[in-house]
Structure formats: C-alpha cells, structure tokens
Length: 281
Image (cartoon, rainbow, N blue to C red):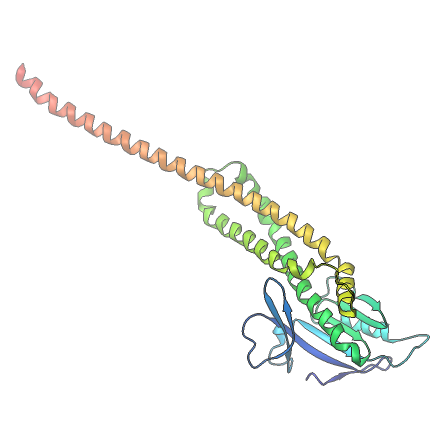
C-alpha cells in the first residue's frame, strides 16, 4: 500500500494513510516529515510502502478533511475502529481529542487526523512529537514491567551474599547495567514530555499539550522514574554486597596462604633441628 492509497468506508470520509518511521542518525535518501528536537534528534520519515519495511513502521497516520457538520457524524466510529484495528495490539482504547475544529484519534501505532488542509501541517507536527515520546515511554514501561520478577528474585542478594551467589555475579552486573541504561533512556525523553507552556499559544502547542495531558505522560514519567530508582538502589546494594564478599574471600585466601607458608617454614625448621639434635647426643 503506497502513501497515496485511500482508506475508505461507506460511512466516512476518504483518508490518506502515511506510514511513518522514527529514526535517529543518518536520514540520507529518506523523506523527512519532521525533525524532533530533544536531548537527541529524532526524524519522522515517510516510508514508501509497507511490504519492504513492515516491521519498521512506528506509526500509521490517516489524514482526512471534514466534509461538513452532520447531526450523526459516522466519522468518529470509523476513526475509532480504524485506530483500534492496527497490527500493533493497542494497550488502551482510542483517545479522542477535539480542539478548534480539529479532531484527532490516537491509539497505539495508529492515529487519525481530521483537519482543514491549511492546518494539517501544524497538527501533524504536534502529533509526531507526541508520538515519538509516547513510543519511547511505552517501551520503557514494558521493559520495567518485564524486569520486576528478576528484581524480586535479586532482593535477598542485596541483604546477604554468599558463595552460592558468586556464579550469579556476572548476571547481576548485566541487570545493573540494564537498569542504568533504562534511566539514561528515560532522561533523554524528558525534554519531549516536560515542556513549558508556550506563549502566545498556537494550535500546535495546544494540541501537543492536550495529548500529553490526556495520555498522562508526565504522571507516567514520574512513576517510571520512581520505579527505576528502586531498581538502581537494589542493584547498587547487590553490587556492594558482592564487592565486600569478594574482597573478604580474597583476604581469607591470602590468610590461608600465609598460614600454609608459615607451616611449611615451621616444618622445615623442625627437620633442620632434628639432625643437629641427634648428633649432639
């Protein structure tokens, strides 16, 4: 399906579907729709077709134009159903935001814009900036959720470390690095989510703010930060226990080596003394 393919329904407007991929780094030979600035630079790039890069599609965006005011507008039902029927399993229901004659439906991996042609660019920019932050935030939440069981299993190690835990030392180190990596990844999306209110407000800034509020991005970011703090504290304690145990074990080994050498020296001294003692008698 090309970007010019029309998605039609008997109850709704025709819409143009854009396949969008968020990338960092080299964007040579790619069609860039929008450059998203934060701690890092993201590029929203348009894909020409689904067949060659199906797994690379981060967002399917349908753009429609209003046809007129209807008493019973079927567009809302159509847009909601289209959003929730994407390839990516939605984590929640489609969210509707209406603002200044603009309607936007958002769901995981899909979005629908209904806007007059002269406002499409501003609405798309706001949606793309929101989408890249939401994509990263959801990915972080999934990673943290998947790591809770491992964390709960490692909590006893933060209190007591023994010889049986030595074989898990490398794995604990990897989990600590993962936790720090997630914190670093979270810090890079903070500028995309925590933003001062723009004055004078524009359609783009108001829509972006409304999307962030409706999806509770700042609240979710705060919860995520607290969860990652727990991960960091636990694995820092595990690392300290592991380090103390290994130092103590090395000290004990050294003590036994010294004791062994002293014992050998004592035995040699006794063996040296015995012949001289026998000769004297």
